[in-house]
Structure formats: structure tokens, C-alpha cells
Image (cartoon, rainbow, N blue to C red):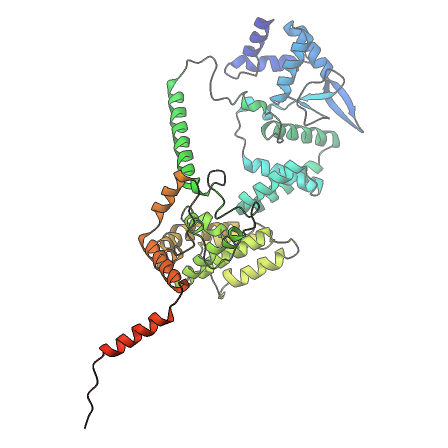
Length: 467
């Protein structure tokens, strides 16, 4: 049985290295010796050349001389790889040994064709389904639709146009042909873009990177070792950077307000606190994303941009974020306001973006949505990150932020690390402030003050009198 099964694999379309790989496919579809096919009624539509799961399992068992369970497993493999597709239960790519209806996939959709699975084609398919279903896509299809819409916003008009043309052409076909083509296309994308939580046979099928019959190549192991070393270094660097800010490794300074009645931690880490902590300012230097994610850091960066006469860049970025995460009722109004303020000719806070980005943005504003300004927002974000952010870290305004509340962790192995990070100017200023507070709180002896004043009066020489 194992030899027969292996011989069938070598001569079938599962392994596409030989010319006789299509021989078995033709034998299964032969009208005389192949799997029996006949018109079958599906709901109210008659589907031509339909086959049942029971007939497929029986044919495989008789032809390969294997038991029914093995034939069923092999038939499920054919369905999972997309050579046979179900007409009813589209999500379950398995063979049911009953009267469930299946069809042979069109050779155009066979994985042996090695056509690249493009995101553009998938976007056109989802847009066409969205038109047919009137927006009632499945949850994972809706998520993929939104992701592709956001990512390919620059050519979404072309995608929608292609989807409309294909939908119009499909309506001109007869209903059985329309149902069959819809099932074929859906089965193709279920194989190549499976729903979340399902296992794709293509991960270990035709597109696998290694050939089990080929000799072992040490180059792949070498590249894998290099990748592991690179990822290990990145992980070590990330841990070393954020070790003092990890709540599992450093204490909640100065104390945990959930365990004590001290609310100093909340007061020091408020969104718009006047004086931020040293650890909070330190996070701003880790990345530009950390700076923008902190409202207090964003205020400092906004003040710096105003001094450089480029505050409109941050204001535009904040406006795009408000549009993206705001309510749907005010979406169109916000998009128009951002256009009039930052993008229109003679705008009061005009921003500088390239012509291609402006063209994409203007085309998208004809039908505004949440992500219509993503291209322009990304352009301004990269401009601030590469240009303004580096100058901000070197500016006196950023160094002034380090005159902040300095908290030392409670762990002994981290205390030395944080004390060594303090600037000498900050330590000197803290020492002077501490001496001033101690002197102000010390008790005053009035007799000593009066005696000092009297001694100072005796030591001063008399002033000459002018006659």
C-alpha cells in the first residue's frame, strides 16, 4: 500500500517535477474510467459535472488498492491543496464520504501553475464580494478588506473598477456557470488566504522551501544561524534598553498606589504634568514613537517645532490621528477641515509634501474615509523622525527636561545603573536645592542674629562729615 501510494504521488500533480504529473488528473476526469460525474441539483440550481465525496473515496481506494480510511485522507489532501473544491461547505477543505457535492478545480487555479498569489488580485476578489454581498462580508474578510484598503489606498480606484467590471461580466453568465465560478474562486482564496485559526496545506505542500529528496545544504543552516544571532542581539538590546522601565524588574516608584495610600506615582505620571520624571524623559530618547505616544513629550516637541517654525507638521499628524480614531459621524467634516488648514492652496498652515503623495491624497479626499490621509501622514511622520527629532534630542529644550524628578529603583543591582546616568549638573542642582531647603527649615535664634548685627555695626568705620 505504501509503495502504491508513493507511486501515485510521483505520477500525480501533487509533485510537479515530472511531465506525467497531470496524467492522474486526466484519469480521474476521464468520462469512462474516471470518477463518475453527473448533473446534481444544488438548492434550486443544477450544477453540471458534479461528483460526490463517496465516489471520490471509492475511486481512490479501488485505483490505488488502499483501504477506505487512507483513501479518505488522500482525498482530503487533494481538497486542501485546491485540486478538488466543495460546492457546499466551503470552509472545511476535507472529503466527506457521503453525498456531499464536489467539482474538479479548473487547471488555471491549480497550484502546479505556480502563479504568484498577489494581494492586488485578492483585493479585487474581496471588493467584488463586497459589492455582491452589499457590504456583508465575513469578519475575517472584512478585516482583510480594511487592511488592503489602507495599504493600497493609492490604487484602490483601479481595484474597485476591476471588481465592478468582473461583477458586471459575471451577471451576464447563466446562473449555473455563475455559481460554479463563484465556488471555484472562493475555493482558490480559501486555500491561499485561509481564515484565521485554520491550517493551510500550502505551508507544507507545493511551496515548501526544501526538497525532501535533495541533499542537505549547509548554506541554509548557516543563514538560519545568522538570523538567530541577529534576532538574539536585537532581543538583548531591547531588554537592556527597557530593563529599568519593565514593571516586573523595577519597582513602582516611589511606591505602588494600589498597595499604599501614597498617590505620588499617579501625580508624577499624569498626562500633562509640569515636571516629568527622569525615567519618563529617558523613554523619549528610545524612539520617535515613544516621544509621540507621551502627551507630555509631545508638548515639549511641539514647543521645539514652534521655535523652528515647523509646528504645522505635528499639528497635521495629530489631526490625522484624530480623524483615524474619531467618530464616524464627524469623519467627513474633519477631513475637510484638515484639507482647508494644511493642504489647500493658500492654507494657513500649509505642509510640504511631494507631488505624488499630494495626488494620491487629493484623489482619496473625493470619497473621504478614516485612512484617506495615511500617505501624507506617513510622509510627515518620516520627515519629523529623520530631521526634527534628531535636532530636538540635541537642543537645549530637551536637556532642560532632564531637570526633572529623579527616582531611584529599589533593586540594588539597578541602583548603580540609574545613579550613573544622572548628569553632573543635575546632581549639583539637586544638592543646592537640598541645602536651601534644610537652611529654610532650620530653627532661628534671634539673640545670635542681633549679636551678629551689632558686631557688624562696630566694625564699620565712621563716615567723614563734610564741613
